[in-house]
View 1 (cartoon, helix red, strand yellow):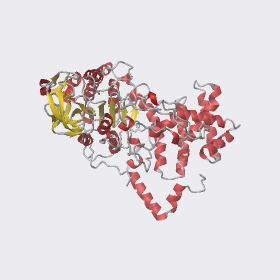
View 2 (cartoon, rainbow over the protein chains, first blue to last red):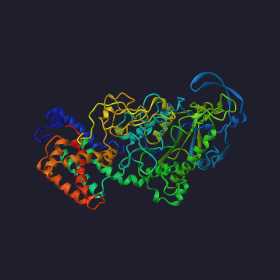
View 3 (cartoon, rainbow over the protein chains, first blue to last red):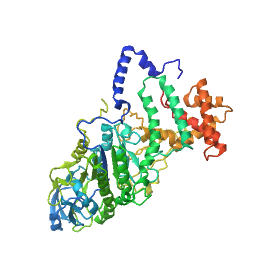
View 4 (tube, rainbow over the protein chains, first blue to last red):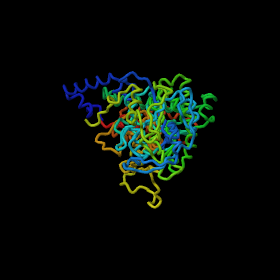
Length: 447
Length: 171
């Protein structure tokens, strides 16, 4: 555009007289609030916040509640007995089913004596730091829908993920790193919708980090030398400043100039987050990691702690993908390697955060999309089907009461008996601990 | 487009695997991404995922009606302009075109006319000359082959144009 002719943007701004100056005043007013310029700048909370960041551990496929955190002595006693249930995979009626007792033993952990199954011995050892929720309830029996619901609250339409809402509501402390990350070796059932921002601005979408040597796309410098890249960025900044000076007070142009500075910072900060060489041998051993290892749930958990330390707001860890997961229709024994993959690492995460004095401000959440049926059509069957009517989760740190269990199911773990925690309540609780009122956290989409 | 590598022909069928080889289920979802040098309107739109490029630059969500696109400016986008293989490949292709001109002034003019649809002013030609000279000198200290230095320096200049706000914003 010739410097002698006003651009469309300048024309609107300068020629419209009264209207233009009103609009400009409005824009300046908003600019004084940093968030208008940078949607990721930290925002004030609705309520006093107990937690500053969230580490969300998501187990793919549906972890059996009655073989993890929901101890049911009567189910053990009545193994093989026939029951009539009124809801089968969301269909109502009268269905005769055979009760199947748990395949693993239970034992009380810590001073609280909360029962945890033998699948999770490490988690049992830190159970005094957890609030175990045994009354979770979801709405859909399929993986895809239930995965969406536990992440977005909706099992029908695409909606923003909980991490995107948190990023939108709070912004983030470290502008050199994404506000919301999803560290997942494989794609879960709902793919990128799991961490999608949907109708919220794209900067709130989860950055997918794939465990391995290059976890963030384009994070490594491609220019032949650092000083050559600086030379390029200097030139870009100079050209952009000259361009912006001719178009005064344009926040979009300013924001883009700044994004290059941040990206330059990210190139050094992001690889540093993933560099575990400065961690002590003791810390690596706590997480069950070998020196140089860049994969596994232990790596994911340790990287999550390093991100929380650096001010990343919402860190989601997904254990496995949409196959070979907790979906044990055929044989419950498949829970064993999956539990082994996560148990030590997640206990280490809670312990490590506590030792560093970070647990008070870091909320650790453990969940799955649904539980598994305490019964089967076929007596003595080795597997279990999907069960969204009741399942278990836990939370730790971030202002959550520790060493307690919340809610319960009936004698067999079939339905919630008291203190129902629907997925929506679960999300509202997470937001509340972060100082966000779920009824005030809204986004004006079309109006 | 400015690098001359955009294929402007209409899109054709995507290289979907033969139907009889399909074994897709919710446990093994269809997640393919097909790269293309044609216009992005011809990219295959997967329902379960998002093309990584469109996800990075606020492409519409294929699962919802999108009357108004979100506009974001985030550092992961800047990382793309700085380090993405695509940007480096295209900038070298563009530099190859510029080297067809004999002197710095002519190359700068071709670059500005092609990328920004205007002529550079004298200050801009001088800034370009200084940038390319400094970059060429800087390359000597790296392990890049000497015969590529001219191309790499102009490719770097091309990237500064591609990353500029003037290139991105129409106004």
